[in-house]
Structures are given as structure tokens and as C-alpha cells.
Image 1: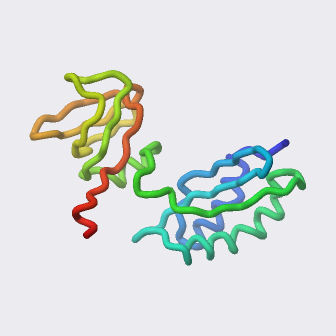
Image 2: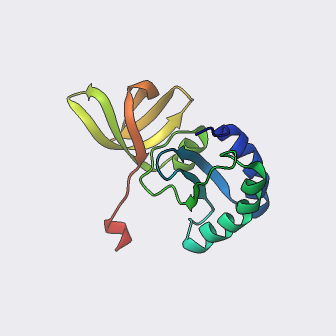
Length: 156
């Protein structure tokens, strides 16, 4: 199936996001028997079902006009990226600065491939992580996954 680029879709949806105070975190298109276009969004204070529904309704006519699949049917989903989504963009790292993150490495560092630490720095190529008062600088390329740590005890 021929599909317009994610960049074209992003450019078409961005004005609606700006107007509604929504941040588009990521857009993905999964092809297959039932193609799906998913727009992951975030808002100050967190995403709820009403926010997803309102944004879905706001972008639906824009997508009809853009026609991302050149007339082929697809399903549109608007969703929260989730609490445990990986940090990917500079904005993601900025939002988590000073918070505890979970880090999974491709190869062990000091005998560990997984640890939790406080994110204290990011420059585009490396992160600085503080653990037990010690700061470690790690190249992003060595990190398999980094995401915000979820404190389930604090949720109760």
C-alpha cells in the first residue's frame, strides 16, 4: 500500500495540535491486513480518553483532506504514548530532567545491563546519570532503552 510520509502527515496535523494545545509525540503507520495510523499525543497534566477523543475528531477532517493512504481504508487511533515509553527526542529528555529513569544497555557497564538513576544531563549524543551520588556519562548509542522509572509505591 502506498502511504504518504510521516513527515507530511505530521506537517498537516501540527497546526491542529498547536491550536488545541496538544503535543504530537509520535506518528506511526502499520501496514497489514488492517492498516492503522496511530498518533501519540501528550498534554500538560497527562492524556485522558476525552483528550484523545477530542483530538481524534479535530484531525479526522484534516486527514480526509490529506488522504495519507491515497484512498485506501485504514483505522485512525489517537493514544497516549504511555508512562513507560522510551525517551527518544530532546524534548523527551528535557521533560524527564531531574527524574529517575530506567536504563537498559546493550552491553554490561560495571557488570550491569539494567539500572535506575537520576537523569541529570543530555546533549544529543550522551546522557548523564546520577546514581548514589556518582555521575556517569553514557553515549546514547550504548543504550538499548531509556524510559521514565515508574514508582508504583507512590501511586497507591
